[in-house]
Amino acid sequence: MSDASRAPERRTVVLVVEDEPAICDLLVEALEEHGFAARCVQKDQQAFEVLRSGGAFACMIVDVNLGAGTTGYDVARFARTIQPGLPVIYVSGQSSEESFRQNGVTGSLFVPKPFTADDLMERVQMLVGDNDD
Image (cartoon, rainbow, N blue to C red; front, side):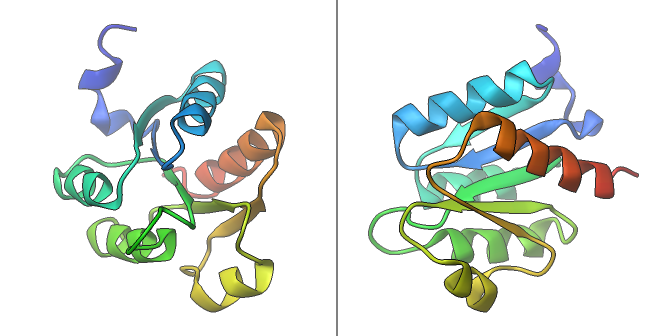
């Protein structure tokens, strides 16, 4: 457990970008219960910094609506410039499947809020499994 933060090469770390602290905590808990390490940031600029830091992520879960300014779509596009094959799952209680199809990065998934932890973890496993090298 103590060396989980020292093992970015394991590619089991999921980056969560979610502006609501309670949802962020729930997602981190669910990910950890399913054997992933999780890093949650609540602002777009924090996500950009984490992505620039060079760590490889197994997957990114990003809220579409991050408050004023940058959207989760923008964060995901930036993430793909750093890590081109990064699996992305968008979550949102306000965006639609149509908006996702128009703005989401290729090969990503959309999960409308509210969702269950099991539903989300099923999608994470699907994407991480498809990208397991």
